[in-house]
Picture: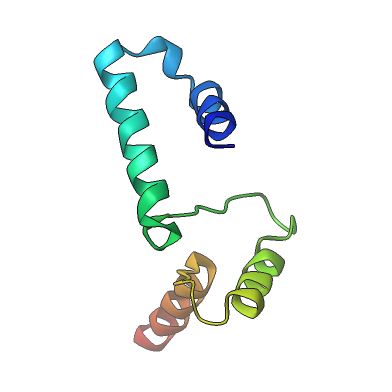
Amino acid sequence: MLIVLQMLFYFGVGLGAYSVAARLSIHAMSILFLFLGTRMSVIGLTGSIACGKSTVIDLLEKVGQGEFKIIDSDKIVHQLYKKESFIN
């Protein structure tokens, strides 16, 4: 299973364009992070308007039961707009 994940990572990231040393270091880092567990993983969720980003965040909050640290940029921007309206 680990070999399949490594091959998907290799082709997905396009490591063929990098030097051998760079490929080996990236593979070593990915194996290290897999060994250390998912606590060290970062997931970036992007997409256009109304594609389900907030739904995925809600599901992660329900399923993860507090294991995920979620930084919601939409909420941050909304708070900034509210603060800005008080200044003007």
